[in-house]
Image 1: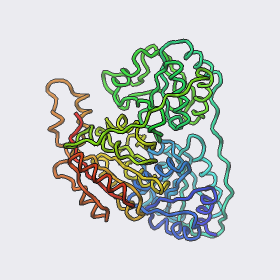
Image 2: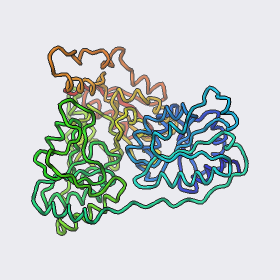
Image 3: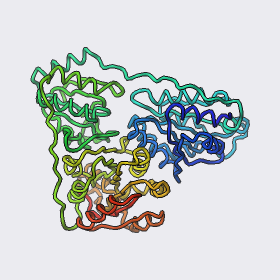
Image 4: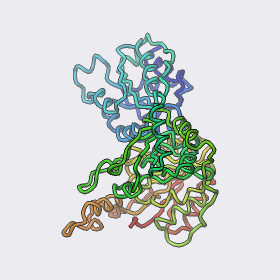
Amino acid sequence: MNGAEALLRTLADGGVEVLFTNPGTTELHLVGALESVPELRGVLALFEGVVTGAADGYARIAGKPAATLLHLGPGLAYGLTNLHNSRRANSPVVNIVGDHATFHTAFDPPLNSDIAALAGWLRGPVRRPEDAAGAGPDGAATLAAVLEPPGQIATVIMPADVSWSDGGAAASPVRPRSAPTFDQDVLTQVADVLRGGETTALVIGGTALREAGLLAAGRIAAATGARVFQELYSNRVERGAGLPAFPRLGFYPDQVLDQLRGVRHVVVVGTKAPVSFFAYSDQPSLLVPEGARTHVLAEVGQDAVAALDRLADLVAPDTTAPVTEPHRPALPTGALTVQNWADVVAALLPERAIVIDESVSSGTALAAATAGAPRHDVLMQTGGAMGDGLPLAVGAAVAAPDRPVLALVADGCVMYTVSALWTQVREQLNITNVVLNNHAYAILRQEWKYFSDRPGRADPDRNQLFDLANPPIDFVGLASAFGMPASRATTAEQLAEQLSQALAQPGPHLIDAAIPPAA
């Protein structure tokens, strides 16, 4: 068994089922090794940012790690943007990065680079087997590392001669560490705070945004009057009828400070205390109200659901969480707007859908519109790096082929990873892509106005660097070039008809939804 086979066999024996890849010459023996490890499905993408984003989406939905296979330092660099989002999502991802043969690097060939330095930026462990015998053990240790709560990215750098050399053997899985428990003393303090009657906010994230955590938070809120908020960007949120619906924290500092106005205690569960996404000269970075105390009931990586359950048992033992009743908006009519496209989606959203939300400025109405829709999951680009939506959809659809995936992606975001459409067609994934096309980097126009409300500043609506209308992007033509059925909607009626048809048919589809920028 060569080193490549030993590594892949070890990962497969440890439960890894999918390898997303854009390989090169230094990875050819790893590609060949896939033939001897049929349990490991190879999924090809044309760009490494699609590879890494798809691995993230797969891990979030499957609840198990995916693997990537990348080509040397430049391939890893291409994939780092969505690995950044993955790191912020705490997704378990095993990165395999091919490298030159060990004897070849001394000659500094053109593609030579410091792969370990690039991988170290992800903050997970980096291993480099010295020979084929080390490939299996390093693979087992890497897999155990990515599974440590809350999940992380770990990297194996595979020199080509380690891959092709004999002497490897599959290694037994290494048991990862379990999630650390929360602090019982903090639990008691938080229970006392909630009983004390001072205005309190719970900010919940991570696994607390699944059914059990939401219901526990709902019980606490109903019994104590605490306000509950969802973190701004979450790796996976369960939503819909039969669940509590809590508002997300706002994007801008003044929005969050308004949401937390009058709060004397902020209890953080499974996330971090709220901070401003960007810095503003006249706004604070830490958004806990001045004079309020912060209590960390469960750190990121601790068992947030157990902490909420225990807290609910203490302060709300006989309380049932209020839940959202089933309801959908009526199908709207007329030209598409920032509000009514979301109403169309909410009116037609199928059971058990996976919604990818990279709608950015166009998605302000989405959460309210879909609150009473059938149960669904929402995935977001957690790190704020654009271009994650289409790749997340690929990974989610691979992880759950029996569930419809609806990717709601802003036009500017699409263009970062548009080649993901090719992979969707190649794999015949059940994904309906809705491009929210306002012909602009509208979020930057909003930011510019937020920064520049003084006289004499440039008009953001006239700034050509925020304009995507010249030349206009033909998203229907792009999708068609990849062999994907595509259509364009300018009215709510057209969007409803096209969305209904796309959801009813197998395989991927794209709808170009023309909407005006948010005000």
